[in-house]
Every structure is written in structure tokens, then in C-alpha cells.
Image (cartoon, rainbow, N blue to C red; front, side):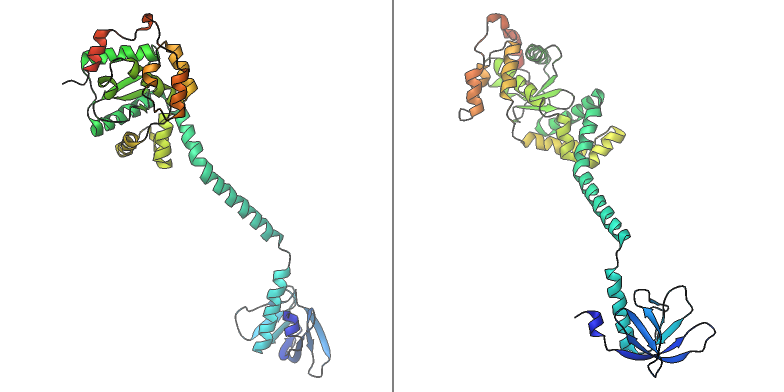
Length: 338
């Protein structure tokens, strides 16, 4: 049942004034299909007011006072609560059916705005982090890497720095990774075999030196870490873990607080080492002229990637490809001796 059908026979008395100087007269008010009919008590129709144009001059007050439009002095006062309720319901029903182009534009704008905000919240952090990583100068990377290395040293033990061993380590790193080889730091405690830090720093577990007979094993792990870091920038890993707040602070101040670096150090020391990209690693062995077999022999026999490396890696190379001298190797194995 529509609102009009519900109140189709409703009538009430009211006080009608035709103009500002006219006397108010008692009238009979009834609801038509689209009009409010005002008649004399003898049922002589005096006027029809359009329901869609009808306005209430005193919203929320009683008796209710209506006008046929904002531009007229005509007024109708109704004290009958049921008639007032009927008129108000009809006015609300008519208003809901009106076209609201402004409201539609508002809803469209709000929906587009919400969609853009959601997209920004999902896209902006990752984009900002990557942009920060791309803009970070080498000096800042080195500073962050050095601070992070210090935090790792506090957790896993001090860096091994025996002078002769350190010199031998530098020669081995240059032999395996080239004259622009990154800094390599050896720690005595048990950590992942290798870690990449910002600023071109590679951290190595001392076991790769102390537990093997030849430097080819350490060289292989250095090559693997070098291949691995080309796929994941250490700074990107750090900022992705730390979040947008740390990224904004780094972007504006060039600094990362020690608590963030300490938390990242803990995660690095407990994380599993990702596999190195096999094709790139085999190419690095070949380019360096280093035997891959000692490194390949340590890979998990059940791992398809390890099997592929053992099958495809170059065999032992000639004596001309000797990594470091025996004396350097002995010094390197003693790098953590106190």
C-alpha cells in the first residue's frame, strides 16, 4: 500500500490565509492524488496546493504551518496530528522519488575517492620504499651496513680481525669477486653461511673457513651470495621489513634508528638462506675460473637445484687459477684465533 492510498480519504480542518492582510478562515483540508485540496466547510473548493511544491514553514513545531511555495504569502495552519503526519510522510515519499543529480555526483565522487585512497594505501608504501632505495646514496648505504654489522656483532660475537687473516681474506674476495669486491666480514658464532648487508658488505660464518680444507668452498659461498644479492637489494629487504615510518624517516633524515637495525639483525641471523639463482651462479664460477665442485658437493643432494649445480658446474680448473697461497690460506683459517 502506498502512502497516498493509506491516506486517500483523510480530511481535517485548518486555518487558511490567502494573503498577508487577509483574515484567517476555517477550511476543510483533504488529500488529492497530487494535491492538497483546500475547501470551505460547505465543501466549496478554494484552491489546490501541489504536494511536490508544498513546504513547511515551522519544521518540528505544532500546529504545523504550510505554504504552497517559498514565493507566496499564502499559509495553511493544521492542528490535526494525523493529517500533519500524513502530509509529512507524503512529502518524504515525494522527496525520495525526486532525481538527485548532485547526490549521484557525490556518490560517484566518494566511490572514486575511496577507490583511489585504497589504491594509494596498497600501492604507495611499496612504491615509496622502492623509490627511497633507488635514491639512497652509496655513502648512506655504507653507513647503514656498518651500523647493521655492529648490531650483528653484538648478537653473534665480534668480527674476526687477525691482521694476516684479514689480508688473506681481502685477496680471496678480490680473486673470487673481482678488484671491486665488497667488504667481507667473518664472525666466529654460528650464523647463516653468508649474509648480504647494505653497502656491499658480506658476512661469513667462520665455519666456512675453519671446517674445510681448501678456499674453494668459501669462494663458492661468496659467489653464491653475490648472485643472491643481485635479486634482492639488502636495503629493500630492510625497509620492506621496517615499514613506511622508517622509510619516511630515512628519506627525510638519512638515518635509521638502532632499534630498527637491531630487530633486523635478529631476523637476518635467524632467517633461512634463499637459494642462489643457479644459472647466474654457474656463470659466475666460469667467469672467475674457480672450481664449483667443492661448493656443489655441500649442496643438499635431495635439492633439484643442488643436483643441477653439481651436474652443470665446471670441473676443477688449472693450477693457474689458484685462489690464494697456502700461507694465506693458513692465515685465513686462523683469522678468528685470539
